[in-house]
Length: 275
Image 1: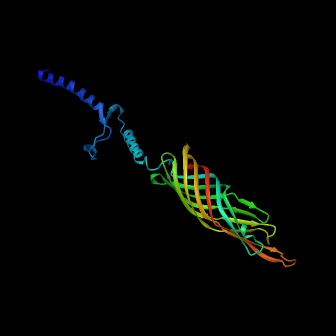
Image 2 (image 1 turned 45 degrees about the vertical axis):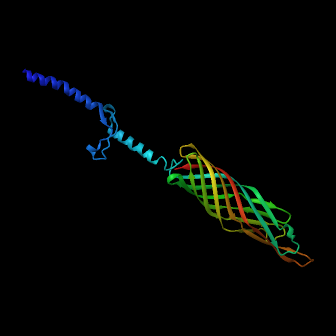
């Protein structure tokens, strides 16, 4: 072998392993712009032994997606949810009584009710929107409040339907407001009334404002504590009765009960399931 060939053999034997080893040590986690035509930004290098192009690319995409959407929905593991709650409602309102009976004592023509407690419950279906905002449609019903005296028995119940919007904070606290319709129903019954009990119901706007706290207890499951103050209009009911001021007269009279505004303070606990 000539001296020239010997020199080339030595150089080739030394350079090839070095180049091969260098190509096995570092490689970019993503192709740079010179290869793929992207923005030209090259990313940190990783060892060839750990280089799995599809895995690294998917991990990077998923991580970026998590970063980009981390603040889109707060406390929102799912798009839709259904919730149920049980509530203690405290009603405050005033009844005004009117009658054409001359014996009516006008000094006692009103009853004032303050924080009368009534059990209730509701079911809601809703969805989360961007920036921690969610909304739902809520259908609720209260138990029946009852009050009686020597003349009559008075009963009040209030089913309702509301559309609510809430702002959820990262801490679990939330604020909300709702607008809907209520259907106060009054029943007036008494031994003096002609034809038994009288019942009237009306439709009234209902507006409410809420403060609550939700805590995640399992995947897609939250326990929900809420206080809400609401306002709605009551309804009126009237009954006829017969009173003989003189024997055999049999004169008929009217007793009318009018509600003013009804203020509701409600404390509820419920559970929400995301799906």
